[in-house]
Length: 272
Length: 336
Image 1 (tube, rainbow over the protein chains, first blue to last red):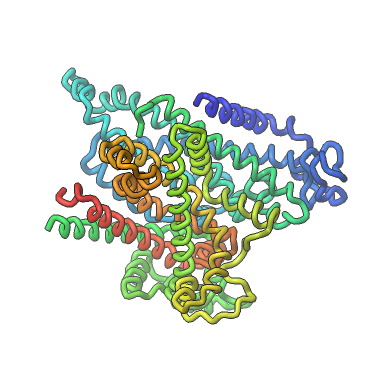
Image 2 (image 1 turned 60 degrees about the vertical axis):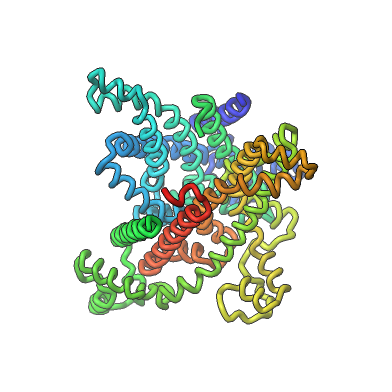
């Protein structure tokens, strides 16, 4: 089972490096158009142009360079939106699970309401309200997905709170608040980290869906979702414009998910 | 009596949830930038026209008043008029609901068959390469959401090997007049199985995309429950009686192992329906979700409100039905 941790970790590491050093790694300007170089096939096919490894799209933009720059946006959204969602959702979950009473009732009711929204529709609606842009996408993900953390962490905190070590900490004279921070928090941290990794994969998908329906960032920034949307319309003339970004997105989402599942197993073999 | 009480409490929380959804949707949409009124008017409309239309749609009143009026209308079944399509929202939305329901139910059937088959094979060939294959397949299927499976299916069966339709609910060449919007059910009732086949073929790709993640969840949970049950004494007894392994799994182990999976399917079904929004878009399927995305792009406030409320109502009703079914099916919960 260590293999999937390593495989997914390696892929995400490579992706992160490519994203970080995108301007140096990418062979071309991702926005540069050249109509004479439109729809060039990838390097192993007839008619390929040297230097354009994965071919070009209908406007002559380099597919590989666009994918590398798209990785920047995908990973940025994953990191920022994932972390923020985790912080807010986990905090609310711990509060509801540890203090129970009114905080629990309000938070659980909010979770119920949130669960009644179809998430994709909710995301599209929020982008329409917030306006397109990177910040809107991150905000939309946080607003929609905090319930994932709140639900699981609340349940986890409830079960931890009922354990003897919490009672003994109380007897030993710890305050409620310091019990929560010093005793409960370290014990739910593995779950939080596993959920955070899964959430990053979800954030990548949400960003891709939003740019796919053309509600994400301005068209100047290449995104995987945007490339997939463009590639789909010309798939019969230039399949590579769709296939490479789709494959990358697939592998990235799979990696985040496998990493999260792997971490969950590694930290806690009895979890579920 | 406790069952009735539980039902009443559930109905109450359901009402509170729906009210919450209505509040969120209403106030969220009121902050949308971009004036929908301006969009409806031809260029060259006067200031007077704008005021008149604003009064017509009630945009000149306070937010709270608007909410009260809108809420009252909704309770009477009046969801207003769509701005972009200029028809009553309730008509538009109810007209599209059957398409989405049929797609979701078709996907559910596929998920149950596919997931059940995988769980069965994994149990029959447990502790072998076949079980490992089932685990890896379901693990991968679960890790990737329906949106990506849809794109993969489009690529494989729509482009590389074009055997399935990837666009639209009905072929334009189909010569058949539907009286209702439940196309598949209607065709089946009218005994036109050729039409049923046509419709199922058209929606097979989107339904499969929706079904893959759920099938994986079913495969994992059902296989786990089946394997646990296979150790029990009564199953061993059945085996010593000489029944085949297939028979033992299907008629002895399955009835006892299926309950947790049924509960899970109930919970997951709402997620599946939520997935139809983007899947319908991908396959140009004329359902609620596709209409919802158009409504958002056109900033058609009444239509968005209507669709979101309908989805929310559908989800809460399904959750209620699932909870009640669990109580009825599980004797342990009956007196709880």
